[in-house]
Length: 404
Image 1 (cartoon, rainbow, N blue to C red):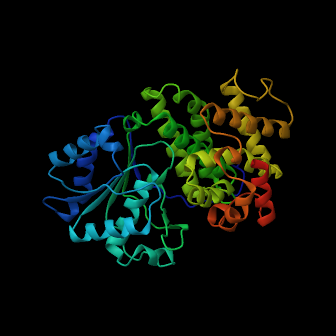
Image 2: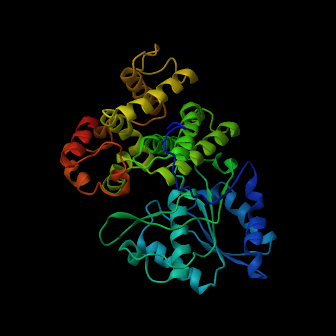
Image 3: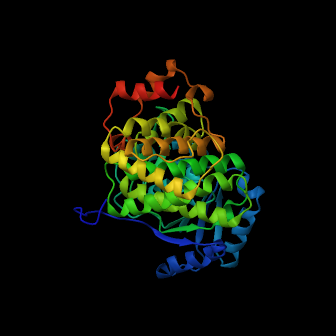
């Protein structure tokens, strides 16, 4: 997108606090946020997942930080990988019964999505099923802070919460849930295991690339998408070999954040349209399926000249960065024509994903042609609608067949 284009955009993002060791400022930030309400001892609902935060020692660290600032804690450690209606309704009821003043969500995307929904329902009333059916939030949410422990989902700076409806078995987003503060501390990702580092990093890179070519892209989302791709493409293959390298962890978190800012304002594409039904139907990690499908969706999209140009830009960038020079099937020599450069970018992305342990084919993760109709039936929503090249059932089926 050039400066001489007709530039128009609507840009929204929460307040962002970023940096190593910033978690120590959590209590101070809460008191500052709640100061106008003159609450003597704020009560927080601390939303976390299972045991991983506790095992790393970060849970005790956070509880100490809050206690030292005279912030009481109501612990809700029930967030699961696929946030569902029961978990959210139960958490909302606890927040109301305990008269919580603020919600803190710390963990991966599912934890943060759970915290968002609880914050919205606590002040707006009703059940989460009402909002999945189309009810809107008319009142401000309870104040909430989101703290990611992975570099991938970007949920801390998006306004939607993806929730599984237990009755229908389908996932759907509710929107209008902007955090008051997104607090990102790369030190919290140092304990993230290799496979989660790979999958969350792949998700982040896919988000940035989809946002770069989305129908809803704009001048400012373009900028953030490109900076994200620059950071993630180079560092994703390296961080998986150096999990304790804080500099790499910092770059991954920054890249993930910038990609999330991009897609929060510029939307996603068909990869994420596929990913939600596949995740539910086959219990496959979100980042893994996104990474697997991206090259196949890119090959479909590059029939559009504008998309081909953007993919060629990625190819030139990755070539200049010298990513995985002696690994994989991507030719060392960079081609001269635009289409070949775009294809080169796709091959390089396949090499990056293979290097970090993400397969190329659906059959490798137990998905076969007999599953395709059910997947395509539920491949809907804004992500699919914003894919740069239009789709229909036959075209979606063909993408899946090509990925088989």
